[in-house]
Length: 313
Length: 255
Image (cartoon, rainbow over all chains, first blue to last red; front, side, top):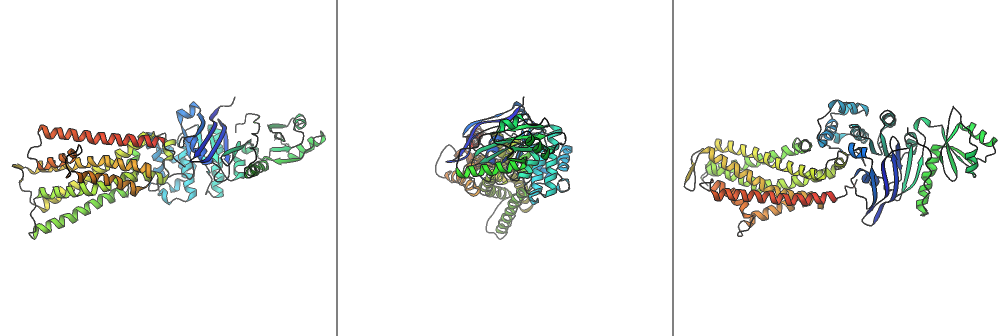
């Protein structure tokens, strides 16, 4: 049984007469990396603000697991806030001062090193580049062993090397220390490499919640489109494990070094009509664009996809 | 939390610039008064000099600076967007407001203390520390300095509720100039109203005047006035801080 660290029940936020977030239902499970996608103004930051307790929902309920209530959460929303006249290191000290704790200098140095900011720790944070501010914000989020971390576009402004570094750090902390993350991003390929589940927000609504493969499973998770999903499900080879089923597709994880060509051959031999076979990333891209189209045309929201098995990175 | 506020606002340049402005004003005042005495335009004792310098700084300049700084204490956090840390560092919002008031009080006292020490040093250097008379009673140098120190500190405490008005207004308007001016204007209104008849708040300035103008301050009437004045300052501050906390608790901290 998966443990939901954060649960949103019918959460809405109306700013004056504008609905920034509408009727969002979502659970974020322990140990997962949940990515929230959506265009600018989709309501992502407002939703994060409500989860963090900065913004009060107009309607609905946000339930935090007792572990999150007890140990708190970390992260940032929007650009990482800094005290511009203080050094990077002193900005981290402030987290201890706010909490009334003695400064753990060793821990501060450790996170500065983890995010690659140790060389600039004594410089005034106001003179940092966007990427350095991101690193400082991430360092602050990692200072304390909290169960739940919110990062709003954490790779924004980072160079490619920095993006890889931060991604690896997040994955490492998830695997080794059981962190749970709620991350927003505009970069679909980055989300694909990082997240275990994705939600797509458009116009304040959470249009889609879908499952992705883990990072080490890139190239091993595929979506098969077929007119007869039931037949497809019944004829899947034993080495293709279904991870998600929708009305029109099944997403499978290939095992034992089997490839997408093997899967296609096996399904065709079993008489299954395969309309398309695509890596999960393509599926994410399609889902994203489809969610945008639906919003533009003001059609009914996409049905939330079925979450089949437990998937912790 | 208080340690965080000290690091944010006291150990930074702005704090020392304000200190320097006070000392610069004192230097100008000293040159003008000493020059006027020297050429025979006026007469002044070291006690007159201290009272004049303190009066100018604590009742005219410091309230303005204090109210603007009070607004800055709040609005700088909005500008830096560091209010987000109240949520992630789990700082109760009431504690955040109280920390702002604490740092305001500390700042006022430190600015005034440094100014006062500089004033006393200049007074003793430039003017002769002769015996001075208050009404019929001669004051020793030590008593004169103690009395003026109390008077200055008292004025700094009077400024606190008006600084809190600026804090409250900052939460409402998010505008530093407007918030600072509302607090400062309220203070100046009270100051001017001293000459417009009796009202409950006149006791505030009566204490400051009494401590430097009365022959004997260890009287029941004076001590009663001090207690009443202190209760008024604490009561006013408490009500305004309570309103600010209630307002801040209800605010969405837009990200």
